[in-house]
Image 1 (cartoon, helix red, strand yellow):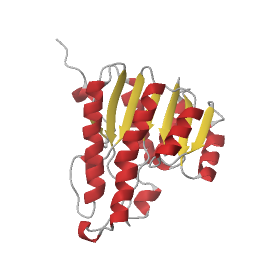
Image 2 (image 1 turned 90 degrees about the vertical axis):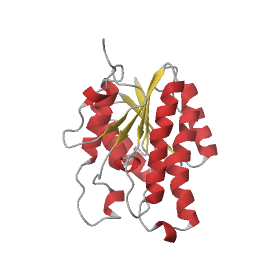
Image 3 (image 1 turned 60 degrees about the horizontal axis):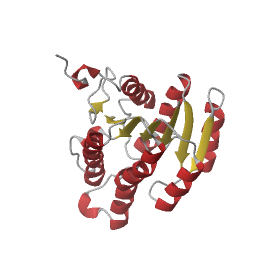
Image 4 (image 1 turned 30 degrees about the vertical axis):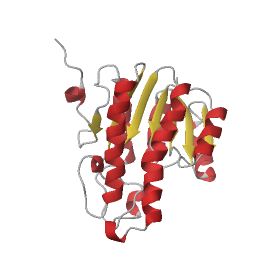
Length: 229
């Protein structure tokens, strides 16, 4: 079994990759920084087989080239994302486009390219608690993450042999968080990785399209399970 993880060279993506590697899942990790990816590949390669590719998910041609090179995979974790933090009225068009291109359009186009490589399996989209509630100075980011949850719900209804879910972290201690906020975050990347793994493990019993929160207890999957007679 093999998992492809976008943004897999650091932060939440790397924590997810480590969790899968601990459980014997081979990996394909994607990112934009070749040096970071190589460091991650060497670490993860001590436990499982790992491929790494430099790819910008906002670039359709790079996605196409990647899919031609990468082996098939059973699990896709769409984790790559960026965060802007400023009043919407002061947001440059370029910054708005950048977040939309990576967080939403890039996720959608990467998924579109990945589906033919997955005859069956699981797709987990990393959304956010900001995909369920709006926050000041995060209008564009929230819009992209609301979009990810809607995309997940719709795609789950379309795909028969691939189960699709979203996981919604709250504030998580990553480079992206530290670059925007002075206060420490509530969660660590390993907390998110733990929920992603639980979702994968329980994919056959969770309602497709569910948007699953990362909480202090990691998550209680009972409320997301199929109703039984």
